[in-house]
Image (cartoon, rainbow, N blue to C red; front, side, top):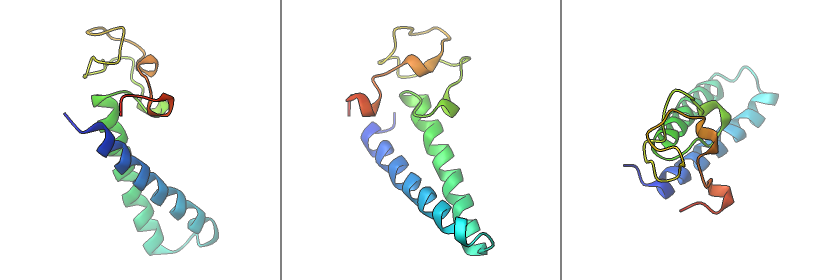
Length: 98
C-alpha cells in the first residue's frame, strides 16, 4: 500500500505546478514548452489522485466512482460494498489519519 502522507505531498507539489503553469499559460497561451510541461503535470496529477483514491479516499469529486470500494476499508462504514466513496473519510483537511 502507498504511504498516504508521501502521496499527499506529491499531489500537493504537482498541483502547485499545474496551478503555476495555468497562470503562466493565461498570458502565454502558445508557449510550447509550457504546454508540454502542463500536459505532463496534469497527467501525473491525474494518476496520483487515482492512486490516492484507490488506496484511501477520493480527494476530488472527479475521483469518485460508485462502482468501486475503498480498498483500504479502514475509513468507511461500507466495507466490502459498492458505495458513493465521497463519504469515506476523514479527509486530510478534516484532520485525517496522516
